[in-house]
Image (tube, rainbow, N blue to C red; front, side):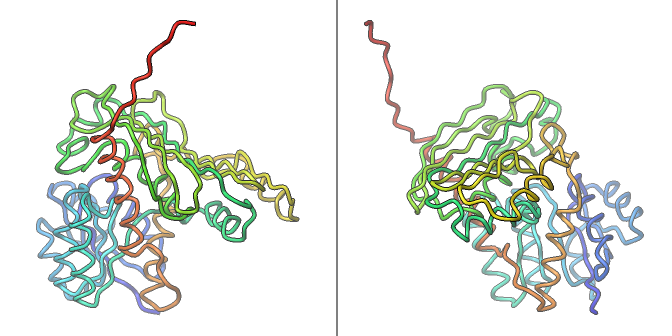
Length: 350
């Protein structure tokens, strides 16, 4: 069995999750970490007994390196991903893949040209409960789906935005949607047909020191004619678990973080009671108030699936094309919110 040698580009909070995930995969080995902050890179490299780099080009020049994971700020993903392709290295990149579609397309083109593989990280797709929900949709248990919604009522204290990139248009690319809610939006893209139309509002209601939205709502129409909604915020103290709701003419499911609050169909199947019991309680806080409060195990599953695809054991579903979908939807929401034609409602005396 081949051991895949990894490097991590970025040495902030999420890089630690990548390192821990890689260390827990039998056929993976972390050989280098690169960070803008040499101190952070050296600290993380010391924890995992590997080499620290100050420049990602030096890391990419390592002949033993096979794969890099990208853990830089969102608006700084394209350059190292393209450089990885030019160096003949595979890359798996944190969400969002990038903050513009043009940059995502350039990243994908570079890897297609080089014959290397670019994959995305949307680790919540790998929750077992999500796979079970996807199967229920694909096998028609909902009948005609009439509604699908994603809700992310999170909280971020003002201190969260005091770094150099969170809440900036240049490096975050957006706020509560592009950074925090994108995982739930990706799940909608995974579970449902493409969105056909969107109408939205975004606003900065609480965190007035940032450039981006801290609250957003959107109404959707999917290609199967179902309606939907998205609510994402970092201004909902103290922060609640993210939620996905799917309902149709023959069933309703409410998915809360990694559990099912509702799992109900008009035709009960033998395994339904077991599903309700097994997934009756959320096991994770999901980063609703603290971005570090997430399990690393889903990252492990995401990265393991990428390796398995390189080994030819399976296909990897989170291709650049697939990871692009949530960014495309979020940018459409931003465009709708910016160009919104408002219908003013006046109170008419009875």
